[in-house]
Length: 170
Image (cartoon, rainbow, N blue to C red; front, side):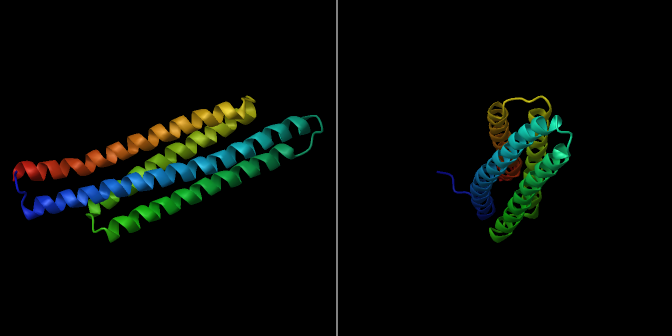
């Protein structure tokens, strides 16, 4: 059995904490975003029906539907901000390096930007092309899960590489 030097052992412990934090935050973020996305899809469904119904009447329902969609999108962004704050707080509390904090915030931000854009595109497609909302929601869930998993893997690789280098140097 090889006994690791204190510095390397500390790095590994830090890495394990970071892995647990990333997995937990990713899970919470995915669930939260999917819930908000389903709300957005519901809003989109209502918007589609409202647009079709009011098209003949010539009123301003499409404008109201658009506003409802934007409100739903703002709710998604709110969840994203909370997720980023949680990442930063947990990272600081677990005394992980500043680099880890930057990586975590960057990864979460990228995931959020991608998901918000996916939701936005899905809403536009559902409203304009009149696609079945259930199909759009299924596609959104698949994309969200894939993006979240890839983000966590990338984050862990970025955290793992410095630790491996430290161990190699020892």
